[in-house]
Each structure stands twice: as C-alpha cells, then as structure tokens.
Length: 203
Image (cartoon, rainbow, N blue to C red):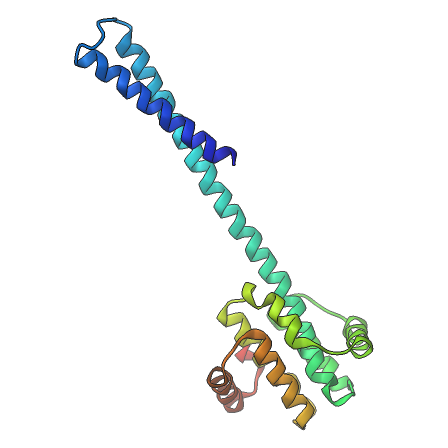
C-alpha cells in the first residue's frame, strides 16, 4: 500500500536526519552543512510520516463508509426477503401482507416500494424455493444486533398481519433466526416485546 510505504520512507529519512544532526553534535563530523542537511532530512521525514499516517487513516475511514453503505443495502434486501418468506410460508401472499410489507419497508428505510416488486420477489422465491436461512448467513456478518432485531420484529409483524400464525410461518421464523445467528432467548425477548405492543414503532 502506498500510504504504508510513505510512512516507512518518512521514518527512515527522519532517523537519518537525526543521525546526521547527532554526528555533528558529538563531533563525528565537522561539516558546517551537517546541521542544515540533517534538519532538512528530519523535517522532510516527519512530513512524509504525517502524510503516510493521514493516508492510512483516510483509507480506514473510507472502508467504514463503504461498509455502512453495504450494510444498508444488505439490510434492505434481507428485510424484503424475510418478510416475503414469512408471507409465502403458507403458500399464499394476500393483499394485507403486501400492504404491511410496503408499510414496514417505508418506515425502516424511508423509501417507497411497490406491490409489483413484492409480488415478483414472492414469485421468484416460490419458483426457486425459499432458502432464507442460507441467504441470511451470507449477510448476517454485516448486520449489527439492532438490525437483526429489526428483521425479526418486521417478520413478526408480517406473521401476525393475517391474524393467524400457522406452523409453516413459525418454522420460517426459526429459519430466519438461525440464518441471523440469534439464540432462542434473544428471539423470545423480541417476541415478548412484540406481543406487548404489536406496532410499527417497535422497528
């Protein structure tokens, strides 16, 4: 990496400059130019070190920004697919569930979605099979605890949207839990909070 090389070169030049100054101070050399050359080298080395350090720091901040952007994208995809997976667990996607999916999506991401996208996602998942557990395993490392909790709560809202929680939907919820790498006690706590409120303000 260029910034690392810059930091290394700066360190070497700084040390050489200090050695030149030291050699004049302790009379290893009597050249009158030694202090000037040594000072110039030391200052140049320090500047190069500073540039290398700030370049490294800037690179790290850039990575974090990219990671946040990736997190947001991963979360939006996971959100739709979790909610759709719950909805089609009973082999049926009704209008109430579609409306609820769109409502939760807008609430969490401040972005509108449309019914066609939801229906197309459902059709694709039905055609190729729902494997939400493995899908989530690929993105769960980019999601923090809060985002994982929001995915579970959003799934619970969809699960309760039609007023009936059947076995297939509960199995799908457990697949989501496993995909996110969450424990049963964690899910039980989220369920408890959900049952106490059952509103969108929870997510």
